[in-house]
Image (cartoon, rainbow, N blue to C red):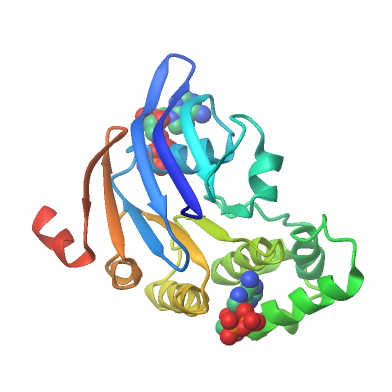
Length: 226
Ligand code: ADP
Ligand code: ADP
C-alpha cells in the first residue's frame, strides 16, 4: 500500500469550502509537487491531511485509515508538516527547536543520532545551536523548520511553500537539500505557487485551482499549462 493515500478529501472553514474531493497518492521515495495560485487550497490540503481543518474523505497511511481529526495519530504514522511561515519558535534556540521535533523520543542516544544526521544535512545549524531561531535569516529559519521536522524521522515530509520570502539562491539551496533527502528515500509532498526548480524534483505535479485538482501531470507538461 502507498505511504500516503488521500481519497475524496473535502475541507471547509465554516461554510467556505476550500478543498473539493481531492485525491493524492505518494509512494515510497516519491516527491509529488502541488502547484496552484494563491487561494487554490494547497495549504488546506496539507492541513486536512493532518486533521487540522474540518474535512470529509479518507487519508490512509500504508493502507491504514487515519482518524479524521487527530494530528497526533497522523504524526505517529510518520506524516510531518513544515507549515507555511515555518512554525518555529523565534525566542527559543536552534537546539531547542530541533529537539522539539523529537519530543516523543525517549532514548537520548537516538535523539543525538538524529541531531547528528540533521547537522550532516545542514552543517550551518551546528554552528548556531545557541542562537535564537528568530534572530536567524529566513533561509536559516527554513533549515531549522525542516530540521525540526526531520527530527521526528518522518516517512512523508509535507512542505508548505518552503521558498516563500527566500532569495533564489537560498531557495535553490533548500531544494537541493530536499533532493538529497528524496534521493535517500524520503517521500515528500512539496507545495509551491510556482517553482521551476521544484518541478525538476517531482515525479508528478498536481495543479490546484479554486479547491479542485484540475490536472495531474508530469513536470515537463507544466509549461504548456501556464
Ligand atoms: P493556498 O494555500 O493555495 O493559497 P489556502 O488553502 O490557504 O490556499 O486557501 C484556500 C481557500 O480557503 C481560500 O479561499 C482561502 O481564502 C480560504 N481559507 C484559508 N484559510 C482560511 C481560514 N482560516 N478561514 C476561512 N477561510 C480560509
Ligand atoms: P541516512 O541513513 O543517514 O539517512 P542516507 O545516505 O540515506 O543516510 O542520507 C543521505 C543524506 O540525507 C545524508 O546527508 C543524511 O544525513 C540525510 N538524511 C536522510 N534522511 C534524513 C532524515 N530523516 N533526517 C535528517 N537527515 C537525513
